[in-house]
Image 1: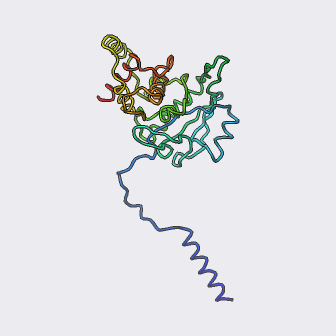
Image 2: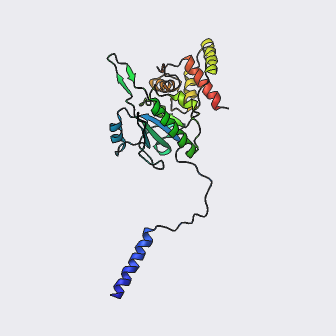
Amino acid sequence: MMTRALLCCAAGLLLAGCASGPRIDTSYSSTGHDSRAQFIILHYTSTDLPRSLQLLSGRDVSSHYLIAESPATIYRLVDENRRAWHAGESEWNGRTWLNATSIGIELVNRGYVESADGRRLWYPYSEEQIDALVVLLKDIMARHDLKPGAIIGHSDIAPQRKVDPGPLFPWKRLAEEGLLPWPDADAVAAERMRYASAGLPTIAWFQDALAAQGYRVPRHGHLDDETRNVIAAFQMKYRPARFDGEPDAETAAMLQVLGNHAGR
């Protein structure tokens, strides 16, 4: 009986040792690291809160956070250190498949409905919801040491297939909170007059300027559907009153001013 008890005790100690894992010395640490999260990507859910929670708590699609409309409850659905399934096929500033390097935030918003004549009628965001979003964004950016410009929309990273968070999302409000760059209105007006007088830049210029902002865009100098979709995504963000994908003087002016700001 004594031998059996000793064997059981030894086996228990062996299992306990295995369960505890490797012995790791943490007395040294490296300063050469940064956050897994390099971007924050904003989406709308295209449905109401109950359906949003149902979809985002399943296996096929997820996000780190979901913000309701009113009350603007912030739900954390995935730990920030884990990868959520929200971006899909995507690219920004040369980085691809951005699930691995981003934090996803979904806003409860139905997106749009199509009218009888085919127009898209967009749903607005509540002030309460945007207030909650701003607080969350500032907290995430501080903790992950992210710079203004790290916040992007799903339509920015996948302009060929996505339009969220849509033209009624208040990007300028985020800029006023110091969360992203915004083109100075006076500088845009001056550049617009110059382009109106001297003529528009080439399509190749537009493509290069959009690529400098971070967009994946063709670089062949032709105004094809893919290029129009990228122009429309940019316009939806910075000039939501008209996002028709046309390379006009105001769009060129905004790209020029943003490019000048980035080059400082």
